[in-house]
Length: 101
Image (cartoon, rainbow, N blue to C red; front, side, top):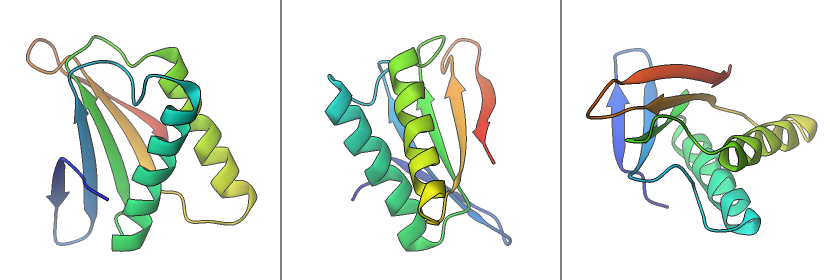
C-alpha cells in the first residue's frame, strides 16, 4: 500500500492520494478496489483521514460514488472509516470539500 503524501499534527495523521486525472481507476472494479485500499491503509496506520487530491475542477461522479459505496460498506460491517476530503483544482483554484466524517 502506497500513499502519495501525509500530513501530521501533534493530534492526528491524514494520508493522501494525488491524481492528475479525476478518477481512481479506469473501471468500476478498479475504482472500488482503490477506494478500499486507500481506506484500509488509513486504518492500518491509524490515520484520522484521507485526502484525495486532483488538478481537475472536480472528481468524477463515478469516483465519488465508489468512495461513498466503500464508506457505506465499511460502516455496515462496523469497520473503521477515516474522514474523507476531496481536494480539487490544484495549481489553479484549490477547493477542499468534506465527503464524510
